[in-house]
Image 1 (cartoon, helix red, strand yellow):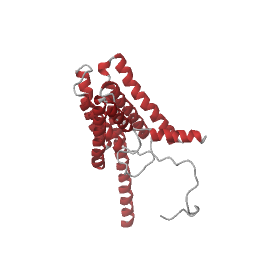
Image 2 (cartoon, helix red, strand yellow; image 1 turned 90 degrees about the vertical axis):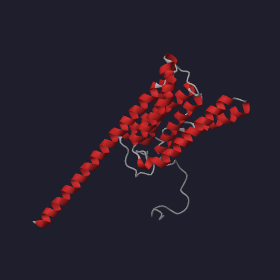
Image 3 (cartoon, one colour; image 1 turned 180 degrees about the vertical axis):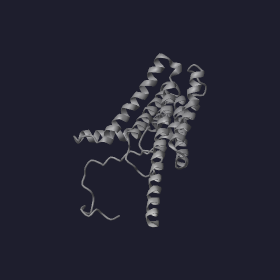
Image 4 (spheres, one colour; image 1 turned 90 degrees about the horizontal axis):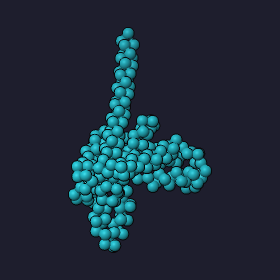
Length: 262
């Protein structure tokens, strides 16, 4: 790669890392385009969905996380040696479900749109929510439902380049900005918003679980439905723009042909 003419060779001087622009679609390999407010709104909704699903898994299902696999690996290590078989099984089920979802997303993302991926996620999440609701909060085989919740989070984590299920790196980046006394960029401000959305989604499940436990799973379903609707609307807008650009190109070509004919 040819170095920038004004940049001396050798390692770059130490300094704050340049934040990566947010991926605006389901394929991390898709060409980057400037994120719109609608794109950021979708990412906020996905973050809230992640918080809601994790809270639902922790409070209602297997008492392990559906989207935070680092914590589940710690649970497996600690629970195995302490003889806590239930926690070991539930954390292992979540880990297997998450890995399966990420692997499936890697194979299918290039061929599916964001609304289709979110529709799949919604169908998967409906199963543990229905099991919880229909049994009055006492579903059989909670490890199975935990694995399905983690499967949905694995799909979401792998399909979007911008983190929407794990935020440790986001928090580190924001802390570095604060430590360097820099003013947050627009993308960093949106990243802070995603952290707030994560907490809000979890709080919604906690509130429902406290006051009406049977309906604690409604928050994840409402949020994934909202995300699907936002993604579908964004896709329609992009298709309309592409159609308009194609029409303008055709009109310009016809105009040039008419001038040449005349």
